[in-house]
Image 1: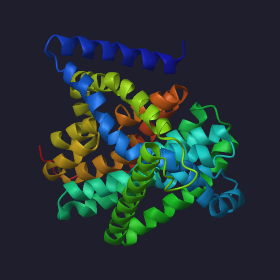
Image 2: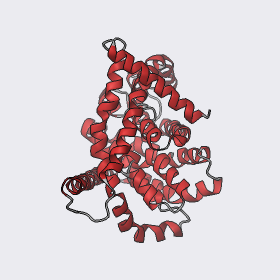
Image 3: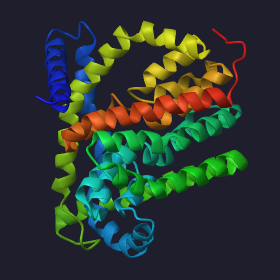
Image 4: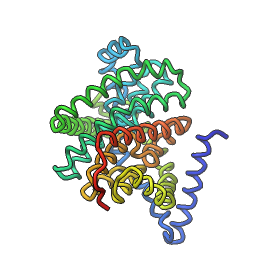
Length: 361
């Protein structure tokens, strides 16, 4: 049995524990997490079903422009999809549609798509809706540190996924270029860049919603609004397969955060950040939204380090784990290690960019 299967069996075990806890009245908190896995289906449906159906159409529209550019750079066109879109917000199905090499399509869809895409379409727009305006410079500096190290996480993830070194390096060329351009932009014009990400995030949400409405109309009435869309069943099957994994992944994360909170808090003190900031990093492993809610109470160094860590490492034991297990469990280990390497190296860069000061407890 390989490590990917071991991870799946661990999640199944926690799903069983969650189901038992639900039956006995949620005595340990696992039953609630079990329910949360299924409750995630609503948000997943809104984010995914429309764009899964739209993927063939988007691929046809984008290929004439993207394919020649990426071929000239020696990269697979699938890398374009998840430079801009999160794996669970349409990046994965679009990467698969655009891939010339199916193996690179999986690499783009699940490894790059769990780092670069989510930062642009989800993390930055969501953060701006939660954090205070005075924390925007820390957000910009953290994203800058995080984006610089995405190619490092992708490189390690690609090697673990079994791709040859040269194939990984060639496909990372456009990603390194984009990462450098974004980093320069965030350094020189942080406010404008962050506003630009927000506008792009809203545009992506609008496209996804149009796709969802169009495929619902086609499914219920037979009227084709957008020709060439994939059947609605494809997206619903993906959402269902993710939800049954999350029913075990959420209880697993719940236990991880409880059991490992003390050692992880010690890591926080070694980094020279306060207790709130250390707790934020732990929360990020499952979901970065609670961390952004905690940012107002963090020390300055802690804010930058938390945002940097979240760029690659957010959702590693949450939604991205559930998504990868639902669509291709063979990529689980590569995705987890790639995201953690990206997150840890981002913390190192953020620590260099933000010198230690008096830490607020």
